[in-house]
Image (cartoon, rainbow, N blue to C red; front, side, top):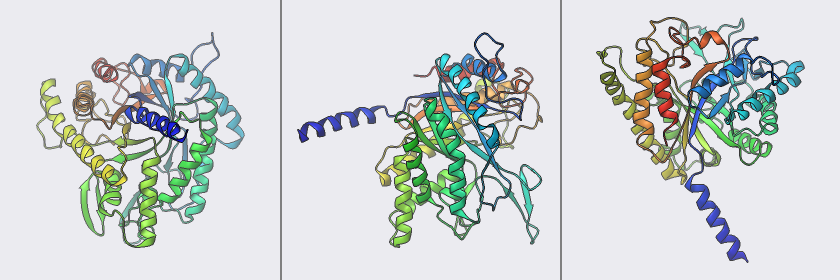
Length: 427
């Protein structure tokens, strides 16, 4: 009897390992202010802006929609994550999410929920630049926060998640994200926060297990790591480009199995956290060219230029994941959770810049950037690559205006839509 149970376990494990995560073909649907929010109208009534946004996503060929509820920290050294929706409106919020998720499901699409937060100044300044006594300036964001009371911060963060864990469970969402780009809190940034050089992986492991206990077994649980042009700095030395992902590699591989017992426990918690996640999200905003590059006028030549760096990034990710798996002994998979380019001239340079209405409209440059990513990440069929949720389609109609719109949205932009349809149809 025990042998039979063991064989069944092996068979089931083999099936799970063969295709643990389906190919994701998604778009982020983002809210805008207090008026353009997640909701759907009753059947027979005019569609809400959110429903119209879902329709635009479906027109691209996507089959997955990521919703991004928001919170804020008004002090980067504070210990409170404050949800944007007040407590008195939470019942209505649950009803709104249900209506919209039901609509998304009715269109044959799956849903992901990805709670995120922003750091703002005491007067609501965003981004928040703080001048230090020596005259230097710190730009605060969610990746470099330094809570004074770490235990309180994680408790507050968990309570923020509780709001959306309930919504996720009640509405059978396919994917849930427990954090995104929280560099200082996951693997640490000792050159900026020397008190906690290794982050708090044990706290994240607790949050992951708590999250799993709250969700249905079929919900994919992820943490999103940024992959940027920033260099990871360690003990005053600059390491490879790659932002938070490079720091994860450094912590897991270069500092593997430390002899100091306290550091070994932290390292083991990070390994276990990595292994227990269902997939790794990657927020990739990397330049595909330099400001000094000659930019070809012919589309095919432009794609070829941009593909050089895109393939470099794919190669770096392939090596990074192989190195990490050699230590963790898990062939982890990854999904792009944020990646996008504005439809402006040279929008593939510093693509992380906030949408500000500046720049000259250029759809070909946006489409070529997506094409370069497709050729570098999708076509090779890497075993670790499981698709993307692109940034973004907005609930706010003015951010989906199509031709002439200089924002991230691909909606109504024929060249970009054609490329995304090709991406989403990739088998």
